Length: 178
Image (cartoon, rainbow, N blue to C red; front, side):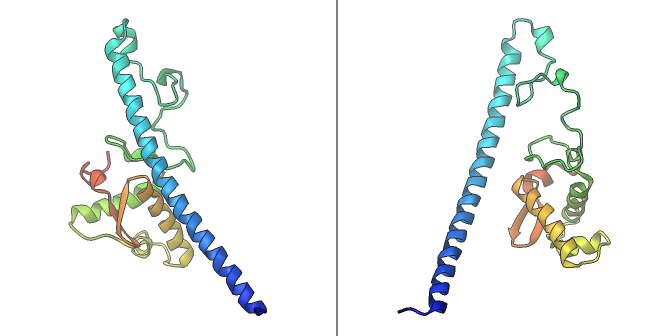
């Protein structure tokens, strides 16, 4: 008969394997979601362009922008690029201004843009905390890491080495904050 400790270890190992499998699946789904969202946005842009070219009343329709949710931009009450408190980080796309991000995210991008401009390497979150004048305590560093990881997931930053962040090449090629 197996010992109680042995049974607990077996259950723990099975649970760990399940957690690892689910994390891998979640990462795969997150990547698939990002790719599908990018494809969707490309189709929205293509449809807008075709609408503009084929619209019989070109004068009325050509200047009107249709947003991805199908509403005309003129009917929306707030501009699309307005900064909202606690707003989510949008997926980076060509021409998207840094102003769509909250101030905290903009500070991270600006610090890394300065490093890029000076041909310096990536920064860790602890270095970012120090650069921003924050105490490099775990809570502050982890808050910065969470923001940096979110920027990586949305295409604003790159993390070529674990824990070391730099501007994504496409963002760096944009020439700074637009």
